Image (cartoon, rainbow, N blue to C red; front, side, top):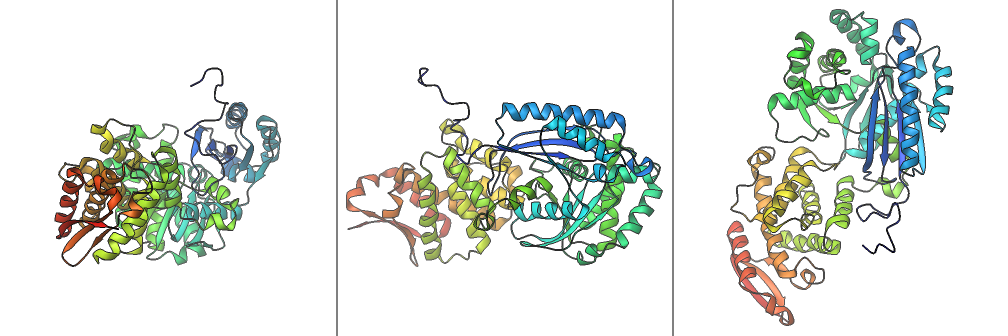
Length: 509
């Protein structure tokens, strides 16, 4: 770097040029959280995320007032967040307050002090508005969602119907972890009765049978994390973690029954949240038993992401969140982003000529894999496959399930390591035999394309790779024939074996 002309404060090559960052502060019944995002985008990436467990909603259901110690902690957190936003040069701070401030008799007094502490206006959400934003968070982060979004906070539970991009009329129920603990006087037996009666009268849940239930909120994420650890699950990504309904009900019953300290991997849950686990489990079990969903899908997105999605224009809202995120990572980490785009088109022609059956979802995942094919190039060649796999397996992608994520990671790994390596046995268990075969084929094709083009644009578009009935043909213009060396021939042979064809390199004019 030229020290006479240093980079400006926010001219970071690893950041997208999408304007100044934006922050959302969520004043919840249990926690007060700051999330700063790179900008308003279809696939927003947090640049900073912090929270304080303040317990603002503790006792509100019985005393009607916010507790003094909770208020003091919350105001302290807000003052800290204000300083952090100044440091990050946040262009826009949006502050939300939910059930505790909404329901407490001293909520207005608290909100006045909170505005002074954070230095920004505060939007006090109604229960219905909170349900709407939570459901929009699901719309923004799942591909064609279909089910009921349920956001469990400390003070309330918001539920809303979601089908692709259409929402129902949400409902709010006083079943947050803190409120349920207070109303039941810390009696699980009473809590079950309270939860059952409230949920049986909830009209939104009448539409849940045999559909997905999208579980939002820190307590449910903590339960899912414990479920993951109990299974020794291969991925650590929480978003789109799926638990069959029967398994989820059995696990919730276990959490209700045993001492919290006896649960496997309880150290992964913050001590301040552990007392709420049983109450979150009670609500989840009753939802399953009453409404009979197909499964429980964990959502890491909720009100905050819904608010960001709401601010997009209609054209941006229609973008695919996975492909948008893959394109962003392609721009930030590839040697030539255009090469990834060309790979999509190059493999389109290959798949069309191969007559291999490919669903629209498989094509979508293949395109994402092509866009991510070169993100590991800065690593040592011996570790590019491993690094690419780890980046993709753990990336903050949305709009993809875990088997799809495993496919992307494996395709990228095969692209670097070849087809004979023992690539991540753990991640292979997450996907299907069909997807594993397609990852092999795509990885082999990308290996041919890489040595042919040096990951630069303008070559693949002139060198089509297509199948005939018996052959796998790579056509190369005569002026590029020197590229067809032994490495290209060997990789073409490897790929041809995978699809049962004879490899041929053909000169074209």
